[in-house]
Image (tube, rainbow, N blue to C red; front, side):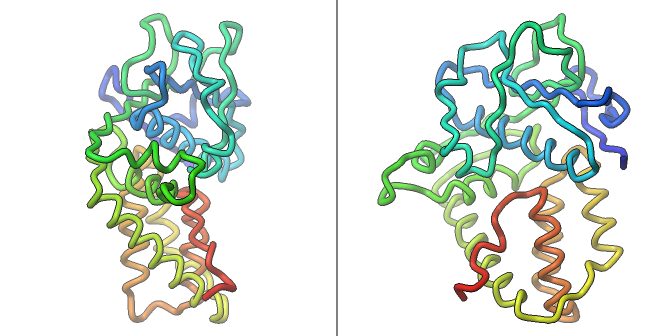
Length: 252
């Protein structure tokens, strides 16, 4: 597979995660709180992006919650996580194989093997994550807009989730979906090699989702880019970003 470098939060050195694979790559997710909060949701999102990036290249991934923390499994509703585009992780046990990578805001226990993929804390002035997880449609924020907002910054750095940030993400997501629906009517064109290479390099460089999003903005704004190629580019990158960018096809 293509090399996929992540920064080890312990050593600050980049490690090629693909070389740690032993058949199945084991991810351990550390949520850290008795109640799932925005930072815990961000850890789940980072794990989901990593899983998608690896599986695109044919690597099998086993993602589980760390057994050394509070029991979160009952609180992780599959419909809620589906709304955020996240596959529900398994419940970790002490008999699980050693993890290749740990994902969370705090470092894993000292005796743990594998790299630590640090997740920056989410500073909220809005209850967007809780509203995205509610069952009440009138109060519900678009969970994929929350996903976009949380993927817009480097995963190891803190991120602010404000009402303004969420509104910007919602506006961008709705606009992209309308554009993709229009581009879908154009003759298909291949993704240009330089765009595909740039996307590959971004995700292999410490899961640089901000670079992927910038690439989408550049492609959308390019006057010389055929609409069919724009559609294929957005569909390709959505395999990693999981923003349901093709959702409006047939409705616009």
